[in-house]
Image 1 (cartoon, rainbow, N blue to C red):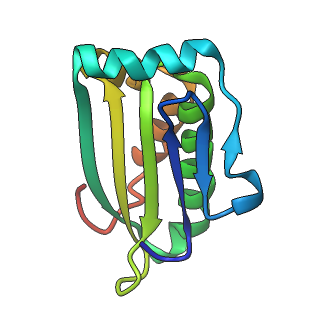
Image 2: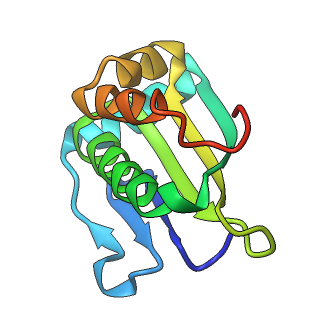
Length: 132
C-alpha cells in the first residue's frame, strides 16, 4: 500500500494501533475493547477485501469521506476489529481496503452507523471509474 492511507487495528490488549503515525501508534482502549477481541475468537471474524478506483477529479472528496468513515468505524463501532486502507503504489487513485468485524453482525452494525450512511451518500454520486 502506498503513502496515502491508514492502518487501524485493535490489539489483543484492547489498544488501538494506527500507522504510519508512530507518535500516535498506541491509543488506550477500554476493557470492553479487550472483550471484543475475545468475542472474535468465539463468533468468528467477518472480513472484506475491496478495491475502489476513484475518478481523479473526485480524489480529494473521496479521501475526506473515507478518512471520516475510518475514524467513525475505529472509534465508535464496538464490533469493528480491523479497518486498513491505502493507495496502490503503481496505480494512482486505486485504493485497497481490508476490513474485519466480529461476525457478520459486526459488519451489519457497521452498515447502520451514521458515518457509513455518509459513505453511501458519497458512493451514490458516481465517484468511481468502475464498479467496486
